[in-house]
Amino acid sequence: MTLDPQDIARTVRAGGFHLRYYEAGSGHPVVLLHGSGPGATGWSNFSGNIEALAEHFHVYAVDMPGWGESDPATVDRLDHVGTAIAFLDALGIGKAAFVGNSMGGQTSLRLATEHPDRISHLVTMGPPVGTAPTLFGPGGGPSEGLKVLIEAYHDAGPENMRRLVEIMVYDKERFATPELCKARSEAALARPEHLRNYVAGLPKGAPLPKWADPKLLPGIEVPTLLIHGRDDRVVPYETSLHLLANIPHSRLVLLNHCGHWAMIEHADEFNRLVTDFIAHN
Image 1 (cartoon, rainbow, N blue to C red):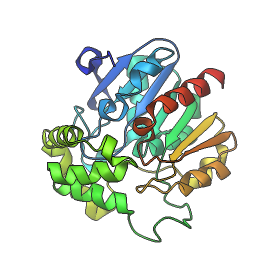
Image 2: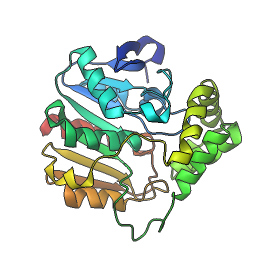
Image 3: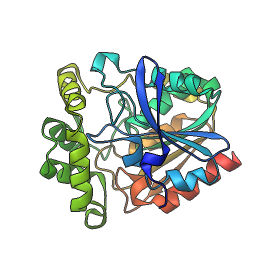
Image 4: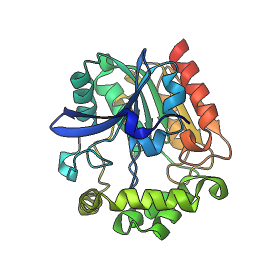
């Protein structure tokens, strides 16, 4: 990797927030949206993808409000779709491909249902889908991974962050390194207001932005690529099977030996899949 995050970091005012984002490359715009874990940012989720994708596209990896170096936001102010549209407007982007992990995938789904004129391609990795039936996932309540994620918001110290990273990946020996866990913990603890706002939203339900209306999924017309880890312990892969059954122009890649972070654990394959999909659809 040759990109330095400090060299490509930018700030823009959009939707009432100052947003940090990382920008590289040229060509068709591709917006990368991170997940909801403590310490998650555009860079931490996509550091292994930005450079490869920027060889073909104009890439933007955004810290959404309430995460990373963007402004804090209480749960009642979270409207990530509205923020994404404001981000496009602020940068003069008419239409972009959206690539979202987990929460970012759910934001991208909702954007495709509500603002189809602003999205050219939809790529998701493990988005939660609240209404999807589960045969193999948990029968009710949060998944094993989401329970650990919530505990890490209450205490983002290195030990809880180690547990979180281990449950996010399949190969914990390779990816849940002490260095990564320490870095994620330090990043989360550096913005305690983000942690407090998330925890304060828990009594109101999952403190996440509004989800896509499942009844609108069959109306998604943009080319859609669903990528999911067979070993995902946060969002079971059958949620992507549900999306595959409901989104007409979709295809699913199910990866063995892969947890919730497909773009990290299988970065090279992920980069090839996304590049080919956007370039040829």
